[in-house]
Image 1 (tube, rainbow, N blue to C red):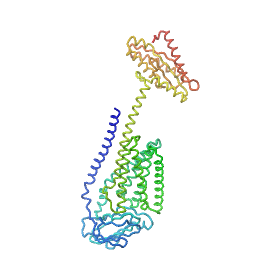
Image 2 (image 1 turned 135 degrees about the vertical axis):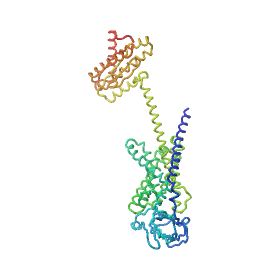
Image 3 (image 1 turned 30 degrees about the horizontal axis):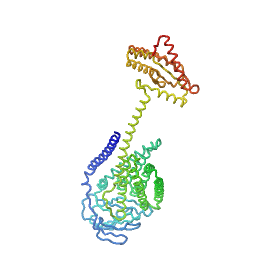
Image 4 (image 1 turned 60 degrees about the horizontal axis):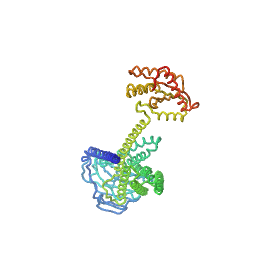
Length: 571
């Protein structure tokens, strides 16, 4: 039975994960159709891929195509000149030349006259120039004229091929970038917003409890991944941010990525109880934080830019991925690790990041990349975030159910079933609590219900239960606002009041008599009466157990007086 129940729970978890992923896919496809419905109209362009004469450091290559042309990775101060004749006719009302540059200053000439320049002032000042798309006005009177583009490389080993150069309508140039990179735009925006909102919430919660540290790590990882995605795919250009600032955000977010992921993994490392893995963990975290701190300082002071230290960052990321992969595989094999959905999600993220990293390095250093699909890291992180949300919701639901069940069991353990008052156990523990907390003043009442045996013998136990319930209601109505009321067993009740003001207690006994008379008038043949005794005291004067005994003795004395007066029968 237990195995079936666990299997059903696992089925529900799997179902919710499948449902979430299916919802994401369906929503993404629907949004994609809305975004791309105008794409055939706005994506028309004039290709300038062929017929180029390219000079790299005085070495000339004639009549080459940018699609197939490759060269050794460009180094700092390399000069690349590309030249061709513009078409005699192109169908644009207001043309714009779109060029994608990578860490290079650029000059554009039409028939020997410079019409555009970017980055030389920053390069001469020793600053980074950035990577991204640049748009140059290309009026119709430039048709048929000679186009010359001069690239001055500002960093080492930044590219080994030139990206396609195209002419678009000015009004469509940015829309094309957004449409072509719509998936990175959607995923990056989601990850950034989710990470910021979750991070702000968890920062507040972390001041109370550290158990939400993993969620905070996920939120920071999500922020870094989202920001990197928006910058890497140039969709952040819609905010008119300079290229060098976009590149700065891209590098900083990439360099910070490993830290929240490493902190997140600490629990998985600790669960393995392996000293070597723990030493490697702290060594890895130290290397990450030290390198990132130094890299940021060097870039800020324009001594060594991020583009130059990127290869070392890649090595650190690769080492981190190998270490994370090893830890996660060991945890998946370990039966003591229960939540394997998280581990599987983290493995998926690691594989996605490794895929993107391999594709980027191959394209940067060789100019070739066998991977057509890009940006899978964002997809992996987004999928993991949704798994996290579902798992968190399910965990909260499970804990709420357990809390409800626990409260129900506690209530059963401390509640009298017939009267729904506290039982003897609760009353005793409450008195012990008063002793420990050094309560200044308290009063203990003991009650004994009269005539219960006669009621049971004459009218049956059902009528006797009514008498007990009625007595409980009367005592609760009288003393419930001043402390606790309990059924000690059979026809005996007790009340512990958090006051030792005897004048107030005497007033309550008067209310007790009034409530008894009121209940007798409401229920026919009830004839309720009860004996009681009380004792007032404080922690400094009396032990509460002694006060309880005094109250109990006084209750029996009261009962004897009632018998002699003919007000009570033998119970």
